[in-house]
Structure formats: structure tokens, C-alpha cells
Image (cartoon, rainbow, N blue to C red):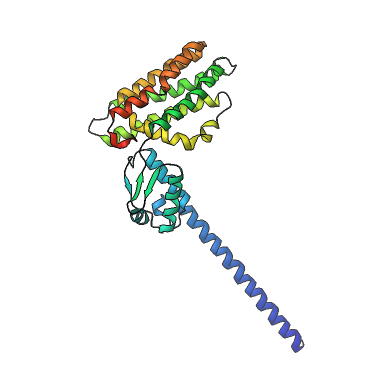
Length: 280
């Protein structure tokens, strides 16, 4: 074999070895990244090594909606940086979006605070919600799909009833237990109303209005704190299903209006609760 051919062989072998090292090194890095992602998917945000402003925004939004952060509560950027183990830039991105949604207010030299509940905004939101659902329940009552929808609503009612029975057994001193069943009931309430919209093929409406509904849900979570109020909602749900089943249009509208209760109940609650939670 000539000297030139030997050098060419060595050069080709080195090229192959470099390609092999690069290729398998890339595979190992990808495998490591995939393993990290799988681990982090099972973690909470606070345990993750990488986290985005959007993810923190979503979590803070839920905390504000569920009243983990009550209206008027101060939110510290430094505390959030430590809690989520991330940078101030990431936290400020989340807070900026919360401000755009009207969920926090930022005051220079004072700090960031959870916004108070605006009852005019809540009343307008309830007006929109009632207008949509009034048409939906009447359409269901007159449709061929009525039996299927009523069956789903009755199944949901059974779950609501079971939830209330468990709630009733919780000690008055067990605030965490009461909150757990209250949240469970409210989830079932959301499903109940989603079934109505799904029944007329308009299931995406709630998703479209989700951002404005968050302010209504804050008020709702503040208003619905007792077994008595949850039981009232359950009875209204039952009556509404019965009216849909028999196709009584006038009664359907009357019951639904009382259930959503666009203005009166909202005003009564804001006047009854401590003023610090509401704009005046």
C-alpha cells in the first residue's frame, strides 16, 4: 500500500471516529434531556430546574382565583423568586401578565397587590353568562338530544349529592377539609354548566370566555363558603334539570335566572362581606 493511501486511510478513520463521537454524544445528551423532562413532568413547578413566566403566571392565576391569595394581599417578587427558584426577570414576566388580566395592581415604591373584586365587572360577567345559558337550556329542551343531556346532568347531580354528604360530615373546625369539598363541589358545578353548552355543540364558549370568567370565579369562591349555600345551588340544579326534562320553557328561564342571580345576590354579598375585599 502506498504512503499516500495509508495517510488517506488514517484520515478517513479519524473522520469516522469524530462523527461517531459527535453522533453518540448527541444521542446521550438527548437521552439526558428526555430523562430530565420526564422527571420534571412529575414534579410541581417549585421542584423544576427550568420554569417559564407563563407557567408561573398560570399557577399564580389559580391561587388568586381560589383565594389562596385574598384580594388586597401583597405579593413579593423576592419571595416568588425564592419560592420558584428563578430569576426576577421570569417573575416580572408573570406579574406583567397578571396585571394585564386585571388580577394584580403594581404601585411604584409600594409593591404588587392582588386586585380587589370589582362587583360591576362581576355583574356584567354574570349578565353575559345568563344570556348564553338561557338560550342553551331552552334549545336543549326542544332538541332531540334532550334525553342524553338530561342523563349526563343527572349523573353529575348524583356526584354533587355525594360531595355534599361528605362535606356535611366534616368537622366545623376542619377548615382544610371543608375547603377541599367546597372546591370539589365547584368543580362539579362547572362540569354541570359545561354539559349544558356541550349539549348544543357550543362547548368552546366557556374556554373563549375563561379570562373574563376568572373575576367572576373569584367572587363565587368568596361567596360560596357554607354548606347551606352549596345545598341551595344543588337544589336549583335539580329543579333546572326537571324543567329541562319536561320542556317547560318559562319555568326553565325563571329557575336559571334565580340560579345565576345576575345582580341582586352579587350586591348582597359585597355588602355583607368585609369591605377590604371589594372596590367601592
